[in-house]
Image (cartoon, rainbow, N blue to C red):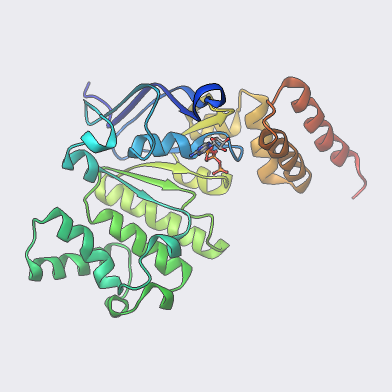
Length: 293
Ligand SMILES: Nc1ncnc2c1ncn2[C@@H]1O[C@H](COP(=O)(O)OP(=O)(O)OP(=O)(O)O)[C@@H](O)[C@H]1O
């Protein structure tokens, strides 16, 4: 069998120096096949972004290894062009990730100039192709990002990432800043691109609805460790851990959202999610279930 597109083993990331050095990700490992979507879910501060930023080379791991297309990835500065181009990222806030002074045409042309393979007319055609891929009207090319809606801006951010012809797209909360209708449209677009371009994705999300829709696999992160992973249906419908059950419950009802907030507060205060904390949180949910409606 051929090697997976992305393979992560024993990955650990630490922040801080000396006595304040702290591992925020430990022993993380999984494989992702070409054309597959892996959702990364977990509480705020659990280490989801740290994990995907390490894959993108934006954070240097303290331990472990990341292999991409069968080759072990070095630190960012030592990555080949093919490695850099092969992994692209889309962030939460499309407004902040697009240069406000540039028209959309320049935003999309910039990565093509960096790659340096195409002359000016070919770049023009490629920019239009990229707009077609994300279903945006060519007339938007002459506008600046501020003139676009949130959904349109996120489409441009996706098109810019696709300019490098990546094999892996990392979407870190890429739907979170969008309204409900746009979340659906952009997740539909990502799914279309996945099958059209055989694109693999790491999809970081708080939203179980889009996870269910988008992901082939789910990986659950708690306190910097992957505590559960498997096919989406298995993890979402037969969660093995109380933590995953809570995450799912939090997505479904407001009392659980309260419990979710309680957990976040514990984590933000530097505490650990012990069985005792979980029991307290489950009590909030049970109490809510006993309330007359
Ligand atoms: N550059 C940094 N320096 C020090 N600590 C950091 C840094 N980046 C993240 N952390 C800490 O690492 C932990 C994991 O953060 P991370 O952003 O990966 O979590 P997350 O699950 O993506 O959270 P969210 O869902 O809120 O984005 C947190 O405790 C965070 O405060």
